[in-house]
Amino acid sequence: MAELTPSMEQESRPRVSLALALRWLMSLGGILTLMGGLHAYIAVRLFVSPQLPAPWTIVGPALVALLFVLLPVGMAASRREPTFWTQALQWTSYVWMGAFGILLSAVVVTDLVGAVLSWTGVVTDALALARGKALVSVGVTVPAVVYAFITARGRATVERLTVPVEGLAPGLRGVKVVQISDIHVGPTLDGRWLRRVVEQVNALQPDIVAVTGDLVDGTVDALREEVKPLAELRASLGVFYVTGNHEYYHGGPAWAAEVERLGLTALQNEHRVVERDGARLTIAGVTDYDAGHIIPSHASSPERALQGAPQGVPRLLLAHQPRTALRVAKSGVMVDLQLSGHTHGGQMFPFMFFIKLQQPVVRGLATIAGVRVYTHRGTGYWGPPLRLGPTPEIAELTLVPAPG
Image (cartoon, rainbow, N blue to C red; front, side, top):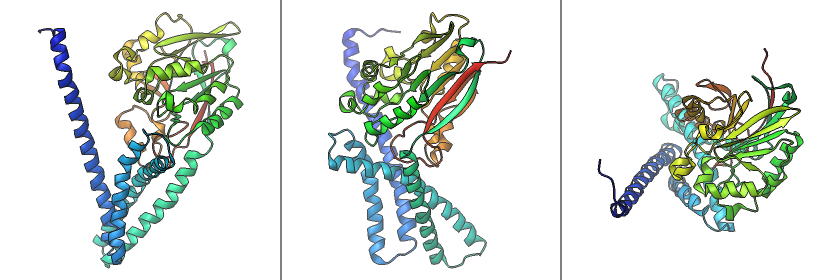
């Protein structure tokens, strides 16, 4: 195969960039087309099919169209200087993003139920049925959104779990690992909210704190003040951090450096050994599973993370995405427990049903390809300030020697 000369390489870069840009535009176009069609379906089912009075058949679809336009506009506003209007756009678009999923589910279910009622002859008045379906859809969605908002913004649930670990020496019996993940400080979560999380964590008096990625949704310059409460985290054996995919959208290396400046230990394909009463524990961490696609030198590597780790000492691996366990198994390195996040436990109905398309597990303790993994539901949220189903979490994992 012929090798590219430097001049040929330079000539090829614009073509590669153009190809990536075209692929991104085609993907965006496909998403917008799909979302536009689903919004049209909602507008027809809520306002046109029930044959509402004239003003509503115009105002209703126009409102749905406006909310559809606000989705990309709100996303774009999140990258601009925060003002009253940009924040209002962000909040509206993010709330609607979540409400849209709930409303769409409600409309689809009422359509299916309505079809059965019509086919069986239980209901023969088509107009009354259409109006009833619209009323039920809205009547279910509004309280669900309110409940989901209160849940997402409320205090995190502390999930307590005792985990047996082979080879854990008596000096580390009962060592308490507190994990927070997917905090997503950014457009709708600020430093005051983060300080409340830090206070909850410190109240648990952890021996080890693990922050397993997706800390932020924004650049260091924009969010430096908001993440300052992280410096107040306290743990007798250390506070450790690994990057998630969202850090790499906003400068992964810069965020790792900022977290280090705040006093946390950022583990980027490396490890540390902690000790208590003569007993040792290896704490390793990898960069995000997809980091190598953005910065090749940051490719996630369990082998590098555990290179030189002492033999016969239990190993705890921090890895943002649960599917890292597949790489661990393939690499042949030994890990006693992997702590991950990323999934948010699904965050809200009905999206939890699609997580399995990308990740091998949604939440909780599971074994993946022979590797034990605890998947955190997330302490914050991404996008919609809503949680319908999975509540926000702070995990308290107590390690004990395995029997025998």
